[in-house]
Image 1: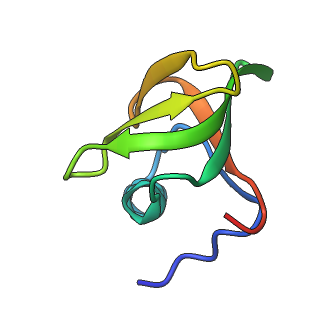
Image 2: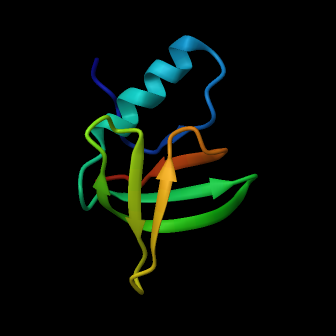
Length: 85
């Protein structure tokens, strides 16, 4: 499945097809991709993907000052991928 990664928003999935699209997106992330993570509508963390697990369910995001956070696909967050990433 190809995933269009331009201005993509993925929120907590409720249907199996939504979960499948979310998993495909997270599996397509590469080191250096610019992302913003929001929680309940507020920016929680933004930066670049530092690493991800082999199954694509967990990523680490590093901001511009070096703060590194672990984000899991089942967290109650929305993931936005910056255009051009």
